[in-house]
Image 1 (cartoon, rainbow, N blue to C red):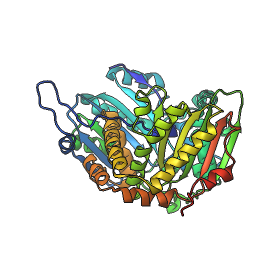
Image 2: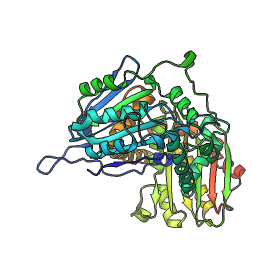
Image 3: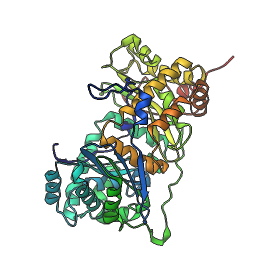
Image 4: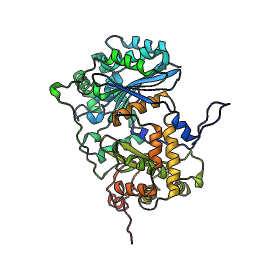
Length: 478
């Protein structure tokens, strides 16, 4: 296993998962294949233990020779103010630049000697630090993660060095038009609220954040009840709990003056933002309505609705035989280079939408078909549509958990969002319970006659007027 120390930046685009089609899973050659339903029954149990300080320890033992272990924290750009927006992302850059016990060179040598991979990411509501390593090195991995999170050196010289790195990355992100478009979508949809802030923060903050700002951020948010130590692979739960007690029992669970930070509600505003640049070859467009929160019972019907609409890319085969109606029309009329549905779920709200990339001559037609697909979900979705969507959604859920790292990430986020890990078998049952009427009713609740949020970047002159897009959010019925 190649050794490396790296950082993974956050992007809402990770929510735009492409579905895959296989529904049968096979065992090794010489063994009988098992059905999808049988494979769900063989998924290991996720075990959960809480320490005295409130930190939760969760694991899934798969018997692999490797494992992924990490710390997932309820902290992200939504917890930041305008003044310190970007602090979490800045800390992510500093995380592996040395601890009070191990300077950067020593830390990197420790990871190198284990043949491990140490990484991190920040999103709007979560921060994660994790390591993939051999199962036998789990104790050392937990020790290093505890140091990184609790004893980051925050050296002034290193802060100044990383300030330049962060500013360079902010410039690079401007070239990722998908990320730019989706950040603009959040900015207009949740304007005036913390969810409108980007994960990376503005360049002005990157230039002005001080060491004390970073220390205050850690002291305010890195509290034990907001942390989950998650592991998957060749791990024993009892050993993981013991290691957590040794290295994380000292994490504070108290706030100064008992002032526990409470997230303010983030209202959704139907609105638009356009950044016209005719020098760009393609237009990047996103349209969304307010979606369901992560724990809402409506989440599964909305996930299924997105599977019915589907996704498309020029590299796909199938052409006019694609199962998605929107994809077939896009191919036949050559309307776009790609489109994807997405549902970004947060603790109390969400964004349900469609993102597409098109040339300037087909924006109007593609927007019309995308909104038409939404209206079909609200009014005319059929049994066959739902059956196809269920297969695609189930395959996607299974495909996203291929490896110890995505499993560990899934465990960490589930514990923070739901207080427990929702097993695949339960997702499967909830998907099976969805009927066409449920899809129509839930989509009508969230989509029909709602004011959308729209973000557009590039040669977007042909994007329809907002009032026209608003009028396409309902059908006149006679």
